[in-house]
Image (cartoon, rainbow, N blue to C red):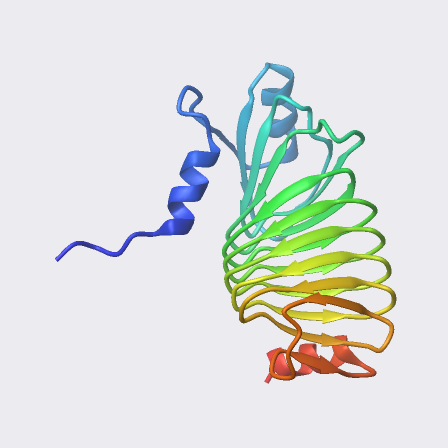
Length: 204
């Protein structure tokens, strides 16, 4: 009998160019040194006791943040580099950063960051963040975020967030949230404290 296919591993493998072997780094000084030397595919794997301010990711660079790494990235322009969050990392993203999140990654998105959330990743969106969630991702959306919730995702949204519901996604929303898509009584709950309620439910 064939072994089960790890679709997440396949996606992360395809993310890196076959012509470039990724360089694994374990601290900021290594990251900066390899970046200055022209490395274009970097995997950052540090412990949770370090906080890495990675700054702007250049447009020709692919960065994967994995393990229990804690980091912050920004992309000053929409042409910034490719960023992947995986494992159980914690990542803060600002400005025009674009991130693909997998596994149990926790991503906080500010400004106009764009997040593609997969696996059981947890995303906190603020400002005008654009979040596309599928599989079993969990999204907490504030302010003016745009969320496309698909698969078996769970979303808690408040303020003037817009949420498009697709498939079996379930949404807890406050009264001011704009809901589009496949709105049904079984997948939408109007709640004055949607984020607190979903967080309480997840922590049981």
